[in-house]
Amino acid sequence: MKDLVRSEFEYSIPIDDAQQMLSTMTNGLIEKTRFVFPFAGYIWEVDEFHGAQAPLIIAEVELGSNKENPTLPSFVREEVSMDMRYTNSQLSKMWTRGLRWQAVSARSRFLRDYHC
Image 1 (cartoon, rainbow, N blue to C red):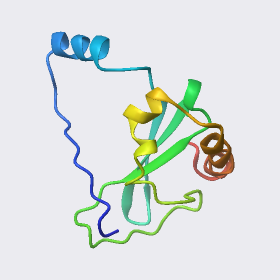
Image 2: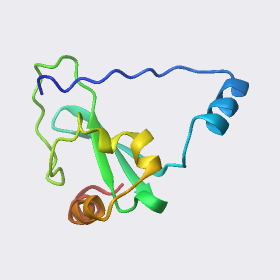
Image 3: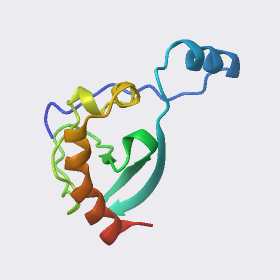
Image 4: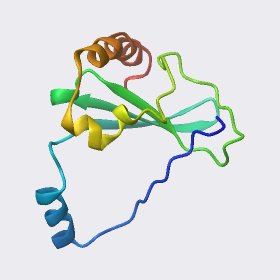
């Protein structure tokens, strides 16, 4: 999983700041349900998107280092960590027909095998 590291900042912000960010910095909403489950020694977070981004499902695993190489669940089709089309900011702006089509079979496998 070398070179698949993106910066993330997760911390609480004041509600007034959040409301200003939502009103001035976003182009659309992201609706999703997050599932958390263990698989092959790792904790996976799987987001099932709704609304404009359905039927996309994105799986994420937090690694201790970029040298780790976890076993991927069967529904994972491709690595998209560095594909900017799959960032929340891009997903809120657009969702193309081609990406929607690619997501359908992965979603079916996930729902069949892992839906919590």
